[in-house]
Length: 181
Image (cartoon, rainbow, N blue to C red; front, side):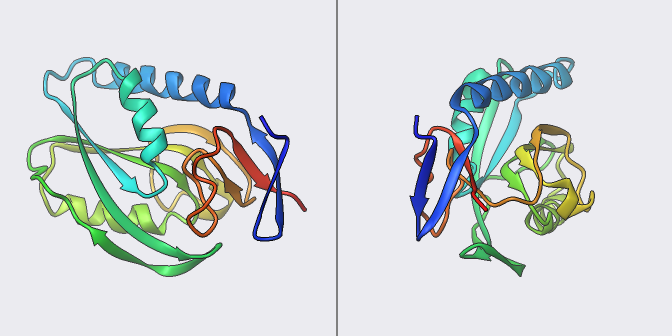
């Protein structure tokens, strides 16, 4: 595994190894299973594309509870900066009314995307809504949104790999890298 990678004249250094990511995913899956252990219904996992697809794929393979899966595409970024608004590009394909919903995110940065999306989900009358994220930047989102399952809290650094990107690239990296300063 590379110690450094380069994208767009920027150097990124190894931050979270593939092995640590695997440990995080297993831990979160156990937490999810424990939380929903008394619920007979399936859990509706909703992955926010594009970034969370890698995390979602690994997570569903570790969760033992029965799940249904949906994908939505929301966008609030241009290059490395948040635009301050959320565009709904791909919407829910199936009803979530009366379902236990678990929203799966790759990273919570400003919290805007998740906040707007949860407000939208609540209009569809689910039984419950919980959130799950691989990475959280609490210094930036300041608890704007409640996160029920968090893989790891990080600082305000810009990260790529394991689904996280820079201009659509670097998602394929098996580890997470942070911008070297």
